Length: 345
Image (tube, rainbow, N blue to C red; front, side, top):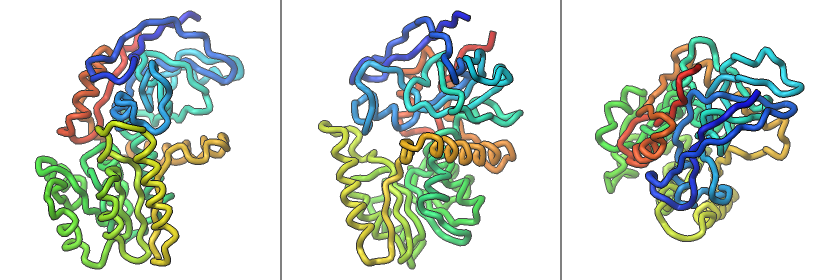
């Protein structure tokens, strides 16, 4: 079967308008592989860093971005159950998702529950796994605890708030003033991140300290996040947004965070600090895939049951990926910006 695909190429360090569109023939799936017709993919913070050459371990330019994808299997390669054809699945790709069709390993597919819209499912793929694992595997916050979520209106942040509230955890969430009503609707107590006394406002709300802080900003503010913790609390850092526009080595901000967190983690103060790495443990590929599938199935089931609400900031056709990236980078939206595939034939 001959399949063609339309892809969005990131040719180098360019503005969103500099993304390129190319068409090419897609090779037939090999043993253990499938062809997935993309129905929805998204713009994450990773792509925003990649276009600046700032993502920690991004490939050399040019390449096709796209961290995760939801779509329908149209062809199965040798050794793959033919029953997968016609089914809707989600997958984490890291790169390559911004394409109308792509070849994937069948082992990376996670079924999307019946009745769940592809766009809704896309909002909780990498965001949902990240939020679930940070809350339940990294910080392990218990019912009745209190946490701080920086960027509670973002893709990961809004999902994290909902998961925490479902688990009986109080959430203080930072966001710009215009998003405070939305953050309240999610179930969090909003604090303006532009307030120069933001950390004091949080301390007023939790004078005895908090059980966990989830910090995607990094930089100098990481110290303040650490200070918010009570004894036994956990700081989970998962990004370096504060330095995303700085020139220089893309790995340096992350390595600085690693060093700082490692030092804090060995201090005899009863607190813990860690940098969340989505890809940790991938050397044991079977165990990594099993854990990812287990966690994503949990999140997708909560979405299907109405516990999680999909927050979609906008939908753009593949040809307008640059506009989608620009909107995501504007920091004016709640939820995830989606790129959608062409209608099914």
